[in-house]
Amino acid sequence: MEHSNLNPIQPLLADVILWIHLIAAAFLVGGSFFFWLVIIPASRVLTADESERTQIVGKIAKVFGRAVTPTLIIIILTGIYNASWYVTSLQGLVVYPGTILLTKVILVVILMILIYVHNVYFGKRITALAKERNVEGLKKIRKTSRKISTANLILMVAIFFLAVLMQMPP
Image 1 (spheres, rainbow, N blue to C red):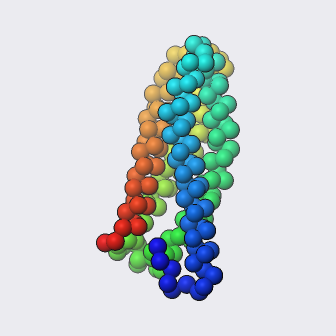
Image 2: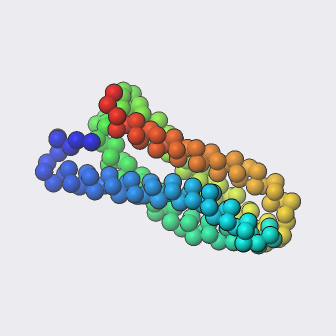
Image 3: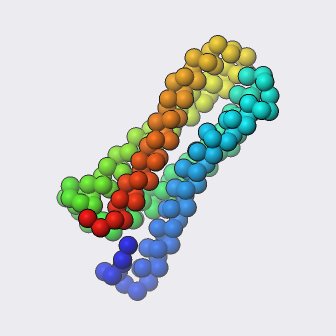
């Protein structure tokens, strides 16, 4: 993105903020995919005991979860700054590329809601059922949990796709 309307120091600041945004987004999305494509399958190799496996995955998820909130804050703050490149007023959200930005913002809000609902309700409930060794309860709640996790991953990919679209000429 060209920063021709900025004073001489602002292009550097804008580029640094963009890179912070990209690195934070890569951490969140990459970490989420790593969790589902590597951690969960690897946990099945560690132990055959479903309760123990779930507790191990839960502990790893808790560590990752501690990094998610600050990462989301960074993404939101840098995203707001970066959005100022595309729209200078709310009316700018109804014309290209503002329409893509608006769609991206809506998907980010939905993603954040799903992340926190999943972590607060399902994460705690799954861990509690694992400690109780309630395998049947785990199977039931995991069905819904997997659907939400899949939706989260799809939303992350869609948001990245929209971010790339915003960089393309109309």
